Structure formats: C-alpha cells, structure tokens
Length: 185
Image (tube, rainbow, N blue to C red; front, side):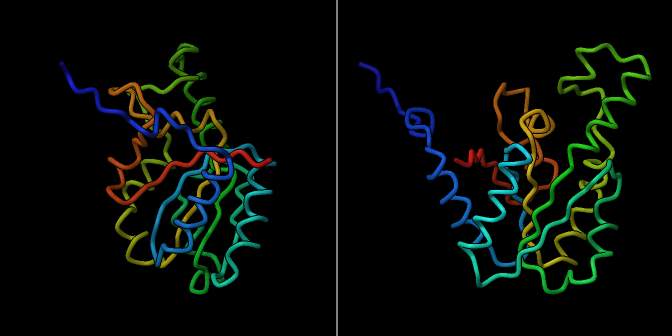
C-alpha cells in the first residue's frame, strides 16, 4: 500500500474572505520591506485598498497609481515626498509597462503567441530594473510594496518550467513574495 500525501492548498481552495484575511495578516505583521502581488481587477483593487485602510489603521498606507508604462520604478518611488512615512504602498498600473512591452515586441515581429504569452525570449524592462535594484529597494525603503495586477499580468510571475503559478519573481528578487488572488465581493 502506498501513502498518498494531500496538498491541502489544492484540496481546499480558500474563499475570497480567507484570502483577504491572509493578506491583512501579512500586512499587519510585515515590518519594513516586503513585496506582495495581488491578482485583482482595477475596481477590485480600489475596493481592496479601501478595505485594507479600514482594517489596518496603525500603519501609514499610500497609493502609487501609474498612468503609463515605466522602466524605472525605483526612481519614481525615490521621488515620493512622503516615502519615509509610508509603511504600505499599493502600486497600481504596472500592467501599462507590460502593454508597452508587448506592443514593442509585436512591432519587432514577434508572433502573437510569443507577444501575448509568457516567453523566455524577453522580460519587460520594468521587471529587469526591479531585479537590478532589488538590494537598493530593500536597503533604502522601509516599505511593504503591494502590486495590484490583473490576471494577464500574473503571467510575468509564472514559472512555466513547473507549469504552475509559483511566483517567478521570488527567484528573481530573492525576497519574500506572496501571490494573493483576491476577489472582492
């Protein structure tokens, strides 16, 4: 007889409320630098931020709304006037950098499959920059960064070698990364 081990995470998927509570607990217990990635729509992200601000009132929470693609997120964060007071920084709009990257690759002749799916051919410049700046981020910002990303953007954090949604960024940045899937009711 063989022993079959159970992967509880697969057997018992979390509810939206359980996922949200796990995120809030993580944010409450994170002291200083951290990177969190949350899969949600823009409207869900707005509701999530509102809820987190209500549930965590002992930390300074701010929002960085990117309105267009960026290549150097470090410089933008460093330019924030109140960066010394921020404990949690929600970052929205990172997907604009992915849109620009995919558009550039399409103009360069990449086929649709490579342009609109994860490919080892290239990495968006903003992610290259984040990887290059990882130690500076950790050393210079005592902030827990929470990236709110739509479903398509999660592919840039997917490790296709294992055909799973294990965050690839964990390997790239070598820091504690949590990928939450939050659906706000």
